[in-house]
Image (tube, rainbow, N blue to C red; front, side, top):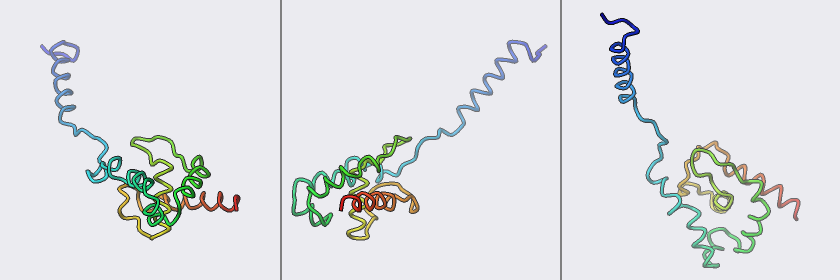
Length: 136
């Protein structure tokens, strides 16, 4: 007779548990393919390409490369965020996105998954304002 303590009963329970575990959906971090190319084709790679050509850098950000680097040095510590589940947005990317947004009002092509109310532009702009008012 099979009782709750018999080895056969325990094996049946183990098999049932393993089957349930196999049927469970595997969960993972979903990221659209276009956004997963951010490292290769995102704002940071564009900034690095623009750094080689001063004319296009000035047209894109409305400032010289030296000014961009100086501002980055001033606010880098303030806009640095810790690591989370995915690759965090670097201070260079944050500044580039914010300056491009302030220059053109366009934030649609940045390949970053950030909800509209995330405050990426506003937080960086706020730190930018504090640092620049102290310096000038």
